[in-house]
Amino acid sequence: LATVRDYLHHMPLLIPGIGAQGGNLEATVRAGLDPNGGGVLINVGRAILGASDPGAAAETFRAQIAGLVMRRTEEIQKR
Image (cartoon, rainbow, N blue to C red; front, side, top):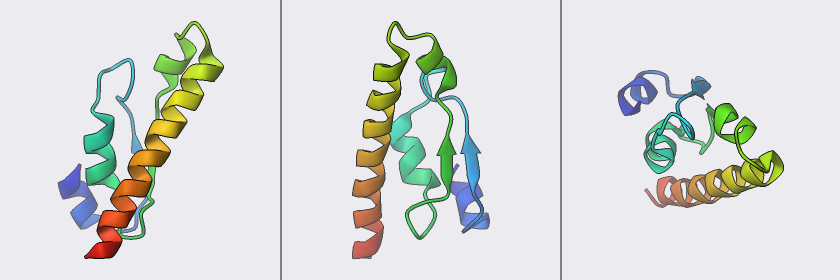
C-alpha cells in the first residue's frame, strides 16, 4: 500500500480487507494516508454487518480509524 501511495500522492484509495478479512487497520492508515492526512476510504462492511450490534461495531471502527488518522496526521505534520 505504501508503494501505491508513493505513486498516487493525492488519489483517493478504497481499502478493502479490514475487519472480517483480518487486514491490519493501523498499518493501513500509516501506509495509506496522503500527504494531507486523508485520501483513504476504509471498507469494514462485513465486520459491521455481521456484528451482533452493527451500530456499536460501526462506532468502534469509526473511533479507531479517527484516532489512527489523527496520530498519523500529527506525525506527517512534524516532518
